[in-house]
Length: 503
Picture 1: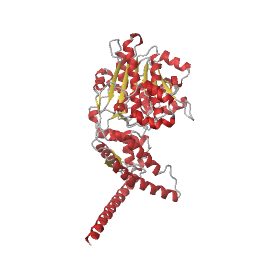
Picture 2: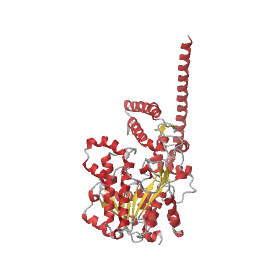
Picture 3: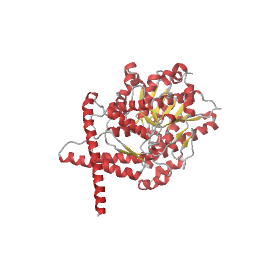
Picture 4: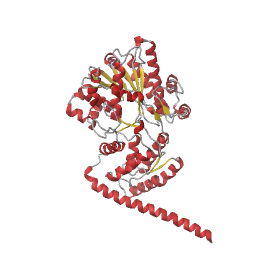
């Protein structure tokens, strides 16, 4: 059975469909698996928009331009929003919606999670752990379930340097974690967070590990009870970046990960960052990840017999294609010197240090003090300012410190199972689902990411490139002048000290 044939006639349930990976997953399924019957997407109603309007907003994104042109009306007819909330019992669904999913759905992609590193421990457990329990509970009742795929992260085991494609033990049980969260006094949250996390750097990685325990335990029950078989997949992407090929080049809708840091450098907002120069963050293009997810679900769904292990783990890791933090930022500076933003605060340059103390002092000197000066000038001259630069620098500093665990060391993620999926793609479907990245040029990939980010996040006007380069040239000379003056002052101070000591 081929991949498209596997999905023919399927009703699919997706959580996290409004997120970065979720949107790319929906687009790819609709475009490459035209036989899919319906895609049910769990959605919360926002303050000012109902779930139907939210679907319209998503389908209006450039990401869906290709399917809108090639298959008009298909997305609108097949995407069915389901009102619900990951943080609620039974996912906050009505009985009618819940029972409808139980009757119809045969493939589940559980992508939803709070990815905030600073999420309070209670909220992170409720959403990432209890939410996973509720989705697994729903899937277990589905009459025609063929596969359940849970999206985790390679970094949920960041308390160990080498990570295999298996489920590791957690410091506490997921049941205890939920019990604590449901009864936790908010005032005790911060104190308890430190105790619970232990070697984990944030609530995100900790709760994603706990969520894996739920999937693992449910699959173990399937092994013991053939009548309640539930084929399951844990899919662990590493740091997810922009699309590098389809459905369009460089699409992204957030500032997370290495692309966000590179953009801050290009804008002149970040002149120093905290990282080891030789550490290598593991990244993976979102379109590569999504194709692999679809193949993983297909493979698990077509290899579902009582003798099989009902759970397979995939580390979606680039491994040998990862590059050092130093090289990454060199790409950024090189790119933005050739393709500057319309509006920049300073020339693109960056200093990388592995010292937290030095990073702190350099941030104050090179970023915070200039931001205070600019804020003061703009305020006294009455010029409009969308956001305080000092507040923005504070956010950048907090984000950098939160990411420091991942920028100051390197992990090794075994990805044998992940790469083995390539051998299960039928030859006649390789054009649609082959996610091979052996011949990927990393610099070209990040150029695609940055070009796309300028276009889709900043709406950069290409007609202003000459004007932007002229401004950049001025800033380069001002920067050189200030650096020269700085060293002249330092030299003069040393000269004065030496002169005074000689007398």
